[in-house]
Image 1 (cartoon, rainbow, N blue to C red):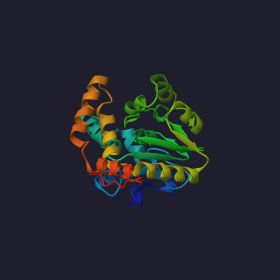
Image 2: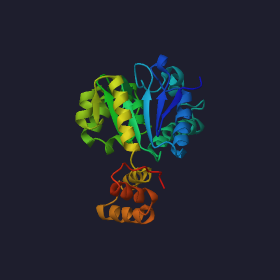
Image 3: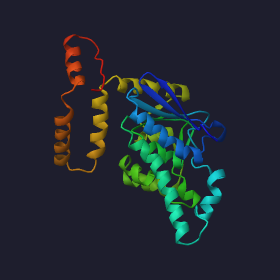
Image 4: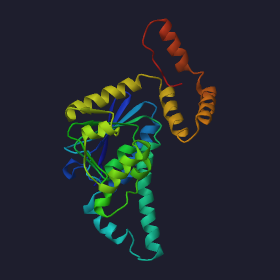
Length: 271
């Protein structure tokens, strides 16, 4: 089943659609290979400045496609019960982790626009994004413990960097459902919109506002935030000083100053 991910470009904004609505965007084998290729391609495309990840149909995603992966999960992804089978399972998990890491490592800002169900691996996906928005009908769940599994594709590693540890533990241990309003209140999503249409418009408006800024500065800010996340304040200050020593003097900076003096909007080219 090819084409479970489609791309729609609108100026400097690219929307990556999970495009398997008839299956509620369950994450089958093709998704795990197509999505990282898509993110890497858009990350290298200078015409794209911001990426939105959204879904066709009634739901963002119900998570891993158990119709495709159920038997493999029960068998441990391996045909051998010994060490060889365990190595095969590890390789499968690492491949899936790479899919989510490709989102996190994309140099462009990535906005998740969530409506309907966002379950299991869907939470892995959105926690790899920089910004999360939701419609009022969105429902989130770290569902793996209810399936007899430990979440292994990024949620347990990235969610603690978004929420406080007690909340992460509660969500991971219970697998309970979280409404859009509760997700906003706990800080999982930035904003909640009335419906999926308002969500799409809001995500695009936010993306366009980001894309209007210097791509050199926006992507630099993302890189500095990621690199300094676990540094002390002094170490992080040294890092950003070195970053700006390399990138501060740019055409974008000169354009910003010139546009201010001429009282016009700047036109950045990312150089």
